[in-house]
Image (cartoon, rainbow, N blue to C red; front, side, top):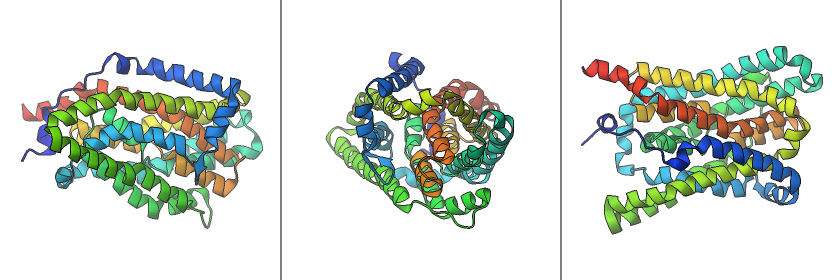
Length: 361
């Protein structure tokens, strides 16, 4: 049986079509469209924004389903046992998510928000901003990482296994880590949000995708599955762009009203994404992890579970708090910055695999 590692070495670099090559342009246009439409016609965005259950926005959840189904269709449960071969990638991801990410964000928050940017921020909100950043970093991504992994041709079985492991750890580690870094004796964990997000973003789409995968393989084999994946790829990307329009439309008023505060809060978030993704990517290379495992490992280590972060910040500090605003900025920054990380890991594949070639020469 071919191992994950062996199949990786023969996998071609994913080819980007015209639409994918100019994805940065489409992202910028959708961000602008969201802000403008949110200001010009706020009523539809307000109506969609109110369609939430436990701080999980249902329209956004439906778009996320469209984004993650292509990756989940690639998951082969019969091959999940081989993920253990990539224990190094799992160790790197878990270490970055739980031993590096929350603490690095605490340092960056204190450095930038508590010190360098202090003169330009409301004095009474600074502690709240830092708290929101820490909460954001303590919640690793559950849903969107399937999108990022798919865009990099990441190993689907590894991605699913790692997300499931992270969610299990999060149930036990989220509250103690946030409490430690915020100095609070007890943390109110929004369990409803956590449970609903896991069901919406993992359980339901995994079951639906596996039923569809079995149907396709039974009717037409691998060719039918490959044809379906090709058809779904543009749908997935269009759902991603529609999500951007919605997210920036929801927050258009905030962006226009206080652009400086939002820009300053974005600085430590952006730095943290590149820092943690870079550390994870480099460690995977040093440890000889295949590129299609290193990509989702780095992306999982950098992205955030923003629904849980927003819900926790509101539960702890209130809807109008600086903490809630900081987590919302994380939502706005997430997609464009993570797309740039996707582009970086794709463009550096030759450099990444040079180490393996040196060993096998």
